Image (cartoon, rainbow, N blue to C red; front, side):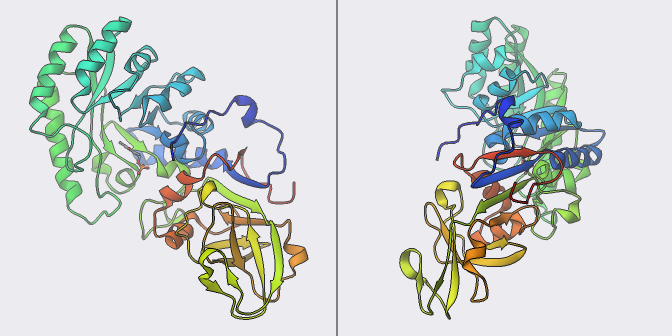
Length: 396
Ligand SMILES: *Cc1c(COP(=O)(O)O)cnc(C)c1O
């Protein structure tokens, strides 16, 4: 699945609150709450709101605006193509994009004042792009302090700094930051974070010794921000925390003082009585144990519901039920037991997760994945509805 950043026009954000058959409600008041909490925790370091992947499925533009209104200082995206629409929408805050390919539009990034993460190979391409548009590119050197993914190794860093110094002297680039990314900050007892921080401090020293004046040294993601004050430096880059979700397996949103932002709810499509031993959904892996009521929930893997979900929780009319059988492309089924009235269930809202429903973490457990993946996967087939402080859970 390709991920196009979904641009939400201002008009969409304030659109009349039509009823939706299926909807991901995004509570911007909760974004603001979470941002204030993270800003307070990170201070005096500043907060970069990470809004990549359409703000983890929540909508990049409305989340970016809410985050900046409530104290975030920077925006971060993986791709340049995710940052540019935010600029075009008039956002003036500093922005950083860090994951590039040979096709990345560095010229537009530089013209739009989007800072660029540099792992190594990008530097000549960025300098050439700066030359083409007669501007100076602002770059943050990315160091691999142990994640083994993007970033310059410590072996490569000295030569990269030398290249950067030459290009800076020629006015093509300015090195304004050094950054890295943590590998195991979600497991605070692991020792590797200490190793990464030690290497990072060394990289910062080397960069400063090479004569660069850094505006921003940054390594902490949400778990690093929450569990490692010594990782805050000048700036923390938070994604999952903005969305009110915990990066830790043994701590909930509530434990961390965060409020989940997305509620996924959908109208029940069908409900009917069936006999015992009725097979359910493709593969007939689930068989009813007794005469019962089956409910059809009209979202499936095309909507971003993982096909791996088993016994996933759904709340209907304040009661908790579990999914039965395989998730299909457009729908999945719940066995709600013999005592429910099918006629009453048809047209009810089923809340998969969020306000007045199960927690995203329960869906993550039911799918063998993490909460990040559950919200980020919710596809463009599901309209987003922006609310500000409270949901309309009634049949509005
Ligand atoms: C996604 C990402 C983040 C945000 O991570 P969270 O765990 O969601 O806070 C920070 N930095 C980089 C480089 C990232 O790719």
